[in-house]
Image (cartoon, rainbow, N blue to C red; front, side, top):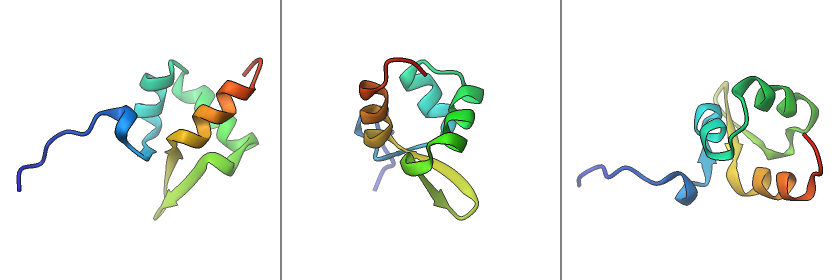
Length: 65
């Protein structure tokens, strides 16, 4: 089975780098937001991953970040 790349909008979990590119938010800002609002995070071992849909919802409901 060939490994085909998956588009970011189709992924459930994103790395912080992918989330930064997808949402247009700096990676340091994402890490700071994760400290304040950890409900859109999940841990894969010690690695923090972003729940794409939850972060999208949070951003849509926010007036400023």
